[in-house]
Image (cartoon, rainbow, N blue to C red):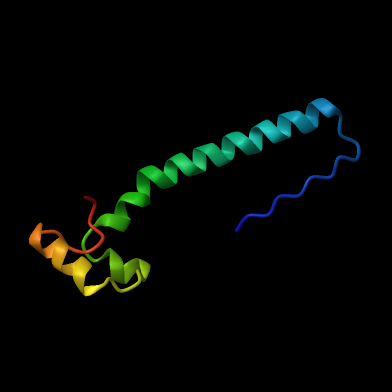
Length: 75
């Protein structure tokens, strides 16, 4: 987790706004990168062990097997 604190002492209003804009853009870029690079890995075979997914019900597993897919594969 990342914690950012900002002391406004000695800063102009413009500087505070620019810092807020920078933080917002940084968070957007981080979210886009996570979605592109990390999220797809959650839906590949073996991801359950890597990410410690909760066990799926027997009915869920049967449905997936009928479709020829493993649990948590992108459908």
